Image (tube, rainbow, N blue to C red; front, side):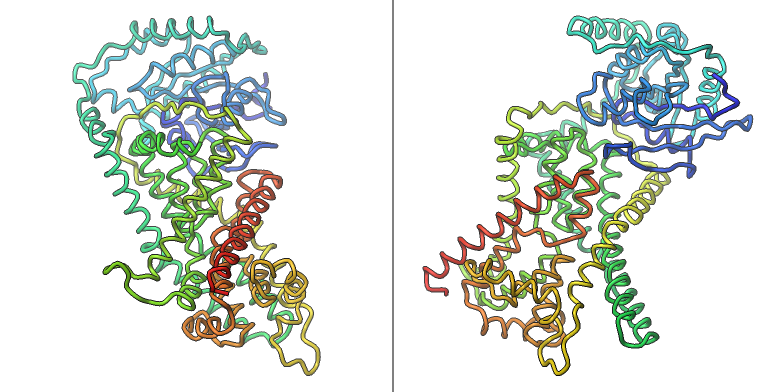
Length: 623
């Protein structure tokens, strides 16, 4: 193996919550790139490591795994990367097994499997400072002898032991002779039990009980994992996050919207009226703005997720919610992504990356758009103002507020029911027990948190923008062409492809009480749900509809029946009218098939719900 010809590759392997990604960031800094493995949606991080002697190593951060047996897609990728079985991927020259120094029991079994692969290995005892504070006594020399590999202690968040780890990896690469031959195979039940016994023996031989047991973790867990107090604290944490997504993001989102509005006005003033101005202002600038406006919410969601994950609370929140979510066939980790979808389904879908099992993650992605996102609020507010009187019921509750609450509750209940159907019909018997190693509590490192936020922002802007921007331009084209004929008196949208589509689809929507004008509002509303308000204002010739909701509500109350208004609300509870969300679903699932399945079932539910609501309302005299 000629190391002068190519850069040596170092693969980082370890259990979830071992600090592996923090170690990778400490090794590579900003010299890293993020992509997906060929053919799968698993994230692939690779970066350059600059050694003290000037040489450069290539580091690969593999997904967390407890074993090479591979029960999930992430674990399959980790296994195949270690075995050198990934298509188009060079096998690693050395494997760094990253261990949580405070909890060696599980990683020792993984280390024994990695030794069977036959590649040079280094054991990195990460979070070693926490182990020392707990009084753990680890015989490093004996541990190295037992595993036949060098052992290095590290504190990734403080960059301690990084130089020693790089030196040990280099030494292993330099000492390697000839090709390696793997002896690893999928273990039988007897071999798994034998590996457990061997790991226990090494644990007893090399690790002594702490002189100062960590009673603080036990005390905190006795509160945070309490069936009543723990849930109350979790709800309080989630309430703060829920409020932050709306309150903290709003100023930044308004600033972004104002900035793009000024940019659009400036370009419009510079360019003469015509097709080029419309393309740039209504297509490109509006398209980019519609992507960037989600960024503050995404960063806030990921800020909470990263902080909770680094602190060690995310695993405990998932543990608390597992039984509740399990009743609907959902995994405990699905709770946080679904909650974040109340702000916007895009960050909610992106947050499903914390769910390890492919089927659990896919189920959560498929139902996340059913959560009532903030983009539905303008539509709900308009229709409620038009048809629901503002009066007090039961002596304390506002009727309009109750209807809004009912719409939110409908989204939640429907999401749980759809999840249950998916599990019972498509993946019957596929629910696996929720097992998670609870990590030690630790204070998040500010630099690491900010670096991870920057990575997420960069990924979102680069990937989602490539999908969303072309879709926005398509919607602009449908709403613009063809131009109205000479002497036309109606709104321009009447003569566009979008208007033609609305009139062509009117017979299909007539059973649920929709007129062609309503269907027209649904077409450009595919770009973003709230666009429907402006389109309805254009169709019914109400200027400034987004700012003058009251005037438009009055017009709609005169043009629509109560049954039609309620059917429109029912449609918006379910219909997937958001092209940016569909683009992100396509990217996150890596499959057009699942995106089309989601679109199909949501449109089916929307039509069925609108039909039932419309017919019931007509039967009760609301037609």
